[in-house]
Image 1: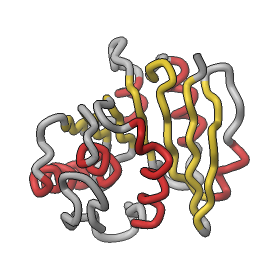
Image 2 (image 1 turned 180 degrees about the vertical axis):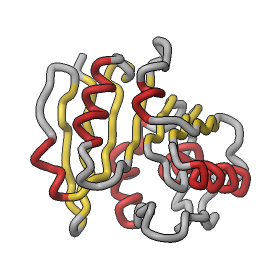
Image 3 (image 1 turned 135 degrees about the vertical axis):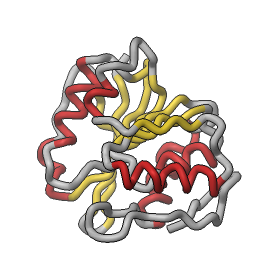
Length: 183
């Protein structure tokens, strides 16, 4: 797995061995970033369920102002730290070894421009995260939330007063859905 664009383009990233994580493929990563590329530069971002940190590192590499990486697994947090150092993207990176929902509930009025998340598939985290982002009013006005998910998770994505679903793309058994905060 490598950084596909920006200042760290081509840098190979470490991933956690085994089946605990499922790194985002280059094809899906390219699709995600082609959907949101105009919204990245200068953005304050959250990378939830960070894994190796690949999505957040891609954001920093492409000019995001800041990324808060949230990863509960301490081994994954160490890999994120090494990947951040390897890409020389320490400035703007904050790595939290905490529960996603605890972080969402404690941002203290910090508004996030862009959230990327790749939760464990078919785990119920999508609905729970959408509810937490809405409850704690995390997104800035017109902020985006991008979710990588299993195709089987598509039926749980519902409408709300807070979110508007902009698009869903399918890549084999993987889907990517982009939400925007309604104004």
